[in-house]
Length: 431
Image 1 (cartoon, helix red, strand yellow):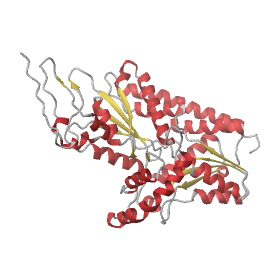
Image 2 (spheres, rainbow, N blue to C red; image 1 turned 120 degrees about the horizontal axis):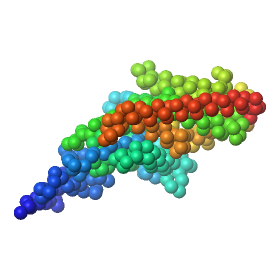
Image 3 (cartoon, rainbow, N blue to C red; image 1 turned 90 degrees about the horizontal axis):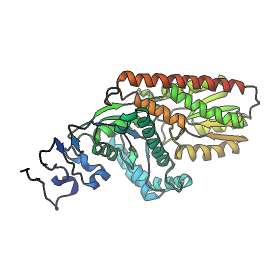
Image 4 (cartoon, rainbow, N blue to C red; image 1 turned 30 degrees about the vertical axis):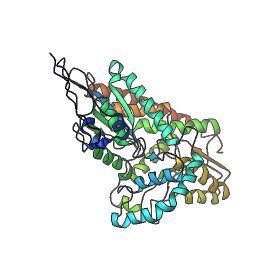
């Protein structure tokens, strides 16, 4: 006679403290299987990591799955002052973002910034909000679905063992929720890909902090592989170059190309953050791929916050100076953003367009981010696939390297073709 199922019963404890949310049932000995009893609310909130637990179904006879966590900065839940206050409170309280003593910064944040900034930011977000919601979140969801589809196709009959989730560093869906989804799907190996091409402590570094913090109370901590940066990857440069060349072939070249990256305080760079150097290398490789002479392109930094000195030159001042110098046709691209968002749509395509035209410029074009372009998703899938060697049953590091080698060759061929097309357009008049 099989053993009876034993279970906790409790209806009075808070959900995160209720043992019934974490205790497995004891099933008849028909196999080595433990049935999950995770409350759906825990999955939604990510609170399953509030207690030591192994919440996912486990079967010794079933091959474990591999998870991929994509992450970007995040977005408010709505373009309203209350939603912005919640979002900014989490974002600006991150010690990776604002490197000041907590006793000094937190009173400023709560007494001054959070009492005024949310209303202003809500107005800016309303300018870019769509019927689908936040542009960044909508694009990130498409990136997640596209990358998962490519990976599953690439790995054939093993592809269904790959699960790709999205977790934003701030706001929803959270990194904790994404990790909970991977755990519930049976993923005991996880690749973490922050969608920031150039590593910075305040972006990718903070993402890794959030991942590790979320797993501190997990009983079964998955094996982790992290992707720190891809600022100089051939596939990334090829996709950037192709996006620019396609626009130029259709509409003609500008006099100058400005590559605008998100800024950071100068002291972060002085203290050893590699971000500035990574941005410069990305810009140089893109200019080389496009065949641009040194006088045809520039680098600048945008999105300043606070009064201290940030990386220079500043984008808005550069745009104004170029217009005053007589530049009539300017293109701006943001290679540090993997998806269009408030900083690209409102700050660059709206505010800096106005600055350029007001000071004498005639044609301003913002070149969209890579978003969910096919070549971008193919590259990101390749970046992840290189981390899966030895993790998928039957998939070896050699097989992953073979895939990478083929895709790298394709990327290099695409770069060569872009350079050829750019050279062919050299004779066309600017503007």
